[in-house]
Length: 214
Length: 214
Image (tube, rainbow over all chains, first blue to last red; front, side, top):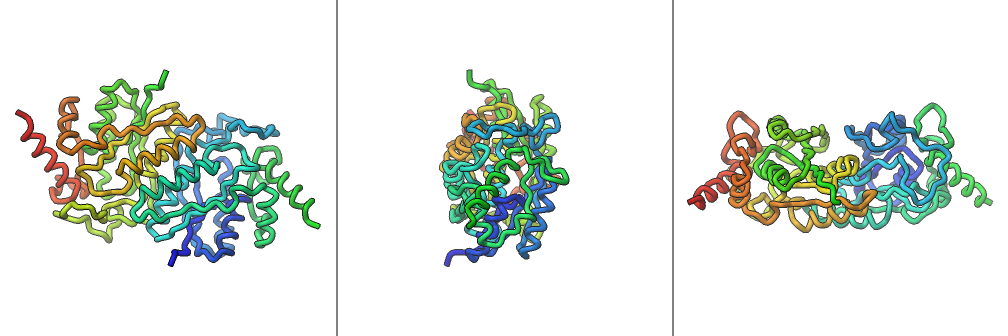
């Protein structure tokens, strides 16, 4: 029988929280993996932890250092873009290697606890163009993980990969996701800034989702 | 022109040190990446650092935590196998996801410093059967890195992948590798134990290399 354990990457944002609720609904025994990687919005770590606790899900917080920065999410010298026209260009908030690293560490965790599934809330419709969110990357990473592990049985599942932000929210609402408990803003102050990519995509998603609810 | 910067995974052992010397000989500007990941033989971190300093190479030490253990190299409850018959079975010293994680972090570093090459001393002849050392894994990881990064230009080079330990040592000697400064033993005490896989493979390599020198 296939193991129903799953390692779920959890940032405390809209996408990963929806993914976690989806996984629980699918009957997975979830193990959340939360990363403290020097992000300016490190408040998301606490928020992710709260969500894991709310659901009674086991979790691990991994402290990582990126001494080389290279992203506006990490580097105090770089400003997070505001009111950007979200197009095909990869923005300054891109963190080099982030999902490659997160999936690698999830692989190690999955192998040790004998989980055969890793869940990541990556989506490539309403997103900032990060290369490590695209389906072709996920597929290639899956292949590498298969060949680089002992039993070669770990799958990466991406339930949101082809959904728009609107549809992610509609899915989440049907699963009872408490979106008021999630956090998306890159700035990480008391209130969401409303003008970073993450706030813009979230706002647009909620507007469209609300319009479609009759 | 192709960037001649390279990120080199450096453990302070025989293979990675030979790889670093090879890279310098090939004209690469090397950036060593050293991992402190809770290994019992953490003395290798200091040894790797010494080698980087000896060569005047820039380096970064990355502190990682593997809270879930799952390897005799990490877990005090597990004994490192002694005098093992090195066959096709993956031994207890296998660290789940290790090279996947190391290569992922190297990818992040490479992307930020605009290096187009990552060098890893993996070899799959005289080795302990770790799945993340096999050429098919390296090839798949290369593909994932290509698709998951901004410019898709980072290559993984494995100059030792098809060499026997004897041939690695002969190559290293021709490049002036000070093998007395390297450390392979998994136990990490004052003197090498002589009976762990790593000591056995090293000893066999030197014996065969010495015999072939006329």
